[in-house]
Image 1 (cartoon, rainbow, N blue to C red):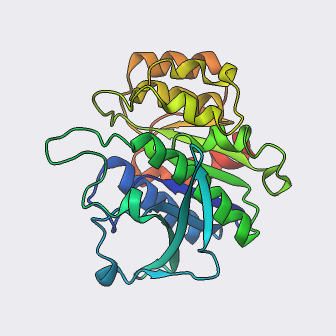
Image 2 (cartoon, rainbow, N blue to C red; image 1 turned 180 degrees about the vertical axis):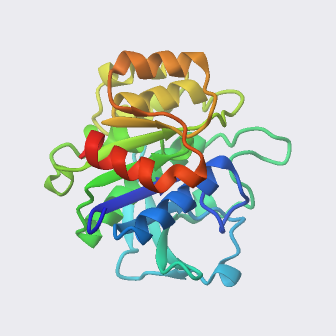
Length: 268
């Protein structure tokens, strides 16, 4: 993987958030690819539960200062960065006080999904892409983890389809068995359509639940990786229908060789 550029975009990454299958895989895969000589960039949301002082996050002034339009409203984009101790890897954090300052990830203290999770997902997707554009860093592979990042493949394929920086980038999505209960509301399609993405591309989002968000990610990816040993049958069927390269579930001991081979032989 020497000198290949890999952009990892994840809802969760350790050590910044508690250990989950998504957070652990995002970190361990990035670490192993970094150690194999790949150039790595990691992006995640700057959730309010992240201790900025302990993890030494600091704002990157030259990257911050943009406004992203979300459903016809200007939302300031703040970029922060930190280094993972002992790994010499930088993590970029997409931040906005209105979307991410709250001391929780996806739900309130009663377990209800935040009503603006749909806009948070759009903001995260656009924020990552706009920041990478500002870095002028063209990734060979964009590897997506977690439902909060699931709109990024769609936005790359549609909203940013004429951006030459990503013209040779391949999109890989890892699928995890970490669904949320309920839906993100009925307005997500209209908010995405505001960005001139056609309704034809959003058929799978007739109901904005976890399964359908993952379907949208699969439909706009070049390859899929099964990040969990067991996935819902509906997702398994959708993967087969898409007829794109698939890497079966791998244990952490097998990441390096299995993922490298998949990237090089099936994706690039």
